[in-house]
Length: 314
Image (tube, rainbow, N blue to C red):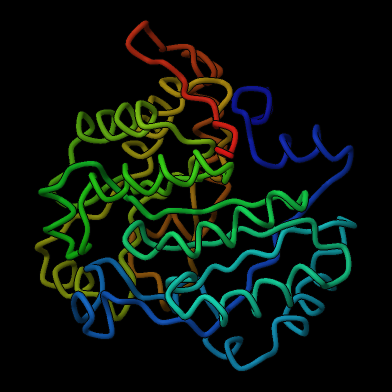
């Protein structure tokens, strides 16, 4: 079986709703992060080196030009979502955000926005702005980097927020009609398989519309890289990631959309694990595991109650 037959993938979800392929075009808005500029901390999260997934040069290119360049490279679709990916994409004055978001929305063939950010950087004014785009018929996703529900681990990785912060903003956003995609990392130091499954359970209990699963990447320039080079941090194995990610998928209600079940990075930025150079390795193995043990939602019990997105309050 192919993965989309076992998992409710974002690509298939968009295909069903739009009747054609819709692709995400990654953008760099030149945003910073409060965990790097000294507002709440310095040095960022211990796993972080944004150069591993974002082109730093792109921040100097206008949004429309970035979209045009990305669309040329992604010629398998006619409609797109503008994905504000790098750093914290709600960390600016609302008027600046409005100008940038609307520059993207006004570009040809853009059907909506995906906005990556932190749970502690989404004030009401930003939620109201995003909700206004929902009311105009745009596809809007607020992508929140939770990473883990274990507050001890969040503190250990210098995340700068706790689970309660994530819970509060998720409930508020969804009550305003904004879809939430929750980012989770498997393999964080201190987190066990049981912690990962508990994180999934707590995420579902709060309510989410989408999930992104990431294996922990050890990347050059991060604090974790120093620990790995000193043999104080073990890289996540493909086998371990496959089992944990697949079991998390099996515990997820079928209505929740998986935007990603793995992730990749390139050398020389990527130090470990080396299997993360090829994003298909984990996807293929996860598909095999699910085919053998059961598809998305197959391990659910009565303790899981899916929370559908609520209509915006008048």
